[in-house]
Length: 453
Image: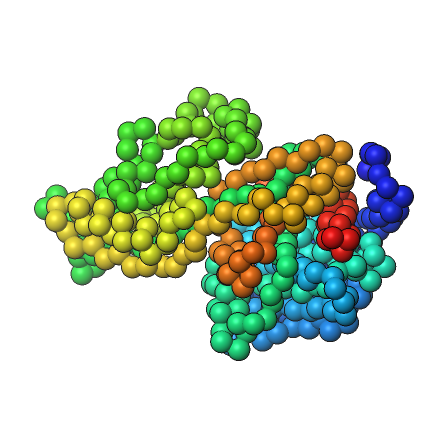
């Protein structure tokens, strides 16, 4: 049950209504979590379930949309006929990360533990879907504004399929709205709300070194013959300086002037940094997270086998997927060009190195001075009983720039239930059910406030 704050009678009624919906919202979220909607998983089943939920919440035209062969279907629906009222687009995604090191059965068996619903996708981003559905139910399936609803199934795989669909000429005038709500971020902590004002972008590249026709015995040939994996390791080691800052010239870094959150202690706790392991890089933690580039390796082909299966052989070919997080304002292709120049200047032993662009998306800076942004802040304050924080996010959601371009003066709002303890993309991902309740209420209050402007 939410703590009551000073409200109008209408707001009190909404609060009570959302509270009464929680049992059903939790049950429906459990049903979604049970669906293994990973890449190459049950995406069609998940899409059909989302359509069912939307139709049950009054979106009678909700349907799946085929966006290409082999693609996970898009779910789209709309609510129209509110003459003189604004149009709000609601976004979330039903696809989830694989179980990874988490036990597969446990990952897709929703379990409530200490007020948190545990399961892969419970937070990221099936909680966002239930926020949208819950807000519709809060108005007895009759929302006070016009709505466009987009729920995609390939956000986690980063294929850009939704972006490609929206960019098609026949869709250029569709999905325009007076405000865009992306339910795929979260607050500072449980009970501490936030709106996300910035997102870093991303650029990805595959770096390949080929040195031999095939692996050869390290005793017979080791020494003169270069090992491809060792050469690749030397390249990767040049991407940071001795302080841990990215050492690639041409990557943008900007001053961060927003909230200084998280501090180092909170960050270490949230990230699970081991005691005695220092943080790397310079500047505040917020600066390093939001407005400076970072580089890491997200995939590796051609590496030696696990230690217990070690083989005395030189590697003939090795490829690393290098991921660069970008400060808002830098184009991914420019970042890729900077990386390629850097690698060309740091090739070990003058070996040939192949660097291939593997995709990316621009960062984002929200229009925080808009009336809609202020109404969202007020809605969060009402739902949580305290002022929200304005944060940056280190992650990327390339879609937001495409939505923004459809109507440049319309604000894009990023919020949701994914506070740090949700452990998204990690074992034991969960959503705090109190966050789901408060964020559902906040979204309902926001839609009501927009209808009254």
